[in-house]
Image (cartoon, rainbow, N blue to C red; front, side, top):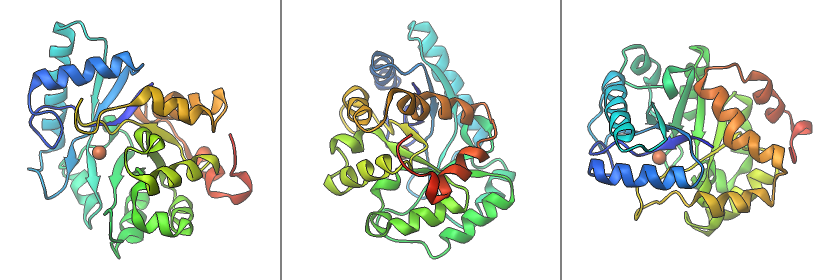
Length: 254
Ligand SMILES: [Fe+2]
């Protein structure tokens, strides 16, 4: 598996506080089948906003520790950016890191409110050539209540990233129902852990992916945990995949 959403850098957000905790999380991820992961600390008002180059340096430092402890996890860098006006400028100025420096930006929405600027910010990102990867669509109340809103975002060209543990109810029953529904309808492009540590928000990948396997065939599962994430971190063009998902006739079991 290639994990494109992970809070593993020590002391930068609500992920691990120490390097030891980061290493323990890395060991757990490797045991659950993750070989490559993008460290995506929060980019919001809650934590100091660290520029893209600093996130890359911190990921490289942690990679050295992983290597020193013979933990076979390859670590890349990015941010999880909370939606706000001016994200294009933040990318241009090197304030926010896209996923491994690609055209793909991990984007988070407000959980309980719909920012009126949402569609405009996404439009601006798309016009600038950036493809938002929408983190955990199953967890936003606005999308739980109105699936058409997700369809509209897909038509704008966003990709969707489900949090694995939503499938086993760890993000609440509404998120679990929504996750199943989106996955069955073929509205999900990739699955990631969004893990924060071993105690708070653990990866729980093995049982979550067993759950996903009941809704997707083997090829479909491989697509969402490996093929599409690989294309994202290699900055490959995924517009055909986006177009297929945003056309209602193409939706359904992959
Ligand atoms: Fe996250």
